[in-house]
Amino acid sequence: MEKLYTIRLDGIYLRAYHGCYDLEQQVGNRFRVDLVIRTALGTLPESDDVRQAVNYLTVYEIVEASMKHTRHTIEAAATDIINAVRAAFPQIVEMECTVSKIAPPLGGKIDRVSVTLVG
Image (cartoon, rainbow, N blue to C red):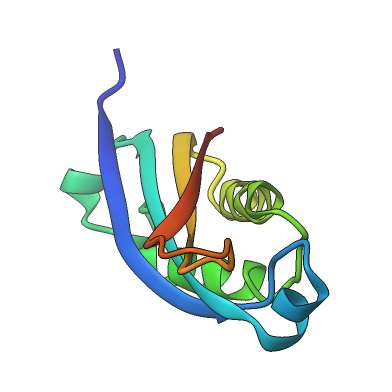
C-alpha cells in the first residue's frame, strides 16, 4: 500500500468579491481559505526533489488566482480551487477545501460562514 502524507495550508486570508448581493461583488469582503491535501509520498524522502512534491507556494498562488474569479457562492469558489490545484498536481489523492466569508452581511454579528468541500 502506498504511503500518503498530508499538506495543510491554514489561514490564507484574501480579499475577494464573492457573493449573491451586488454590493458584495462591488465592495468585496475578506475570505479565509484552508486546505488539506493528501498525496502519495512515493520516493520523495529519498530523492528530496521538490519537483516530485506538491509545492505549497504554487498551491498558494493557485488559491490566490482562483479567488480573483468572482462567484455567487463560496461553494463555487471552493470547487474552483479544488479543480485548479488538482489539475496542477495530479498525484493528489484527496483534497479538502474550506472557504470562509469573514463577517458576512447577514444583518447581525457573525464571525464567518464557511463551506467545506472534499474532492
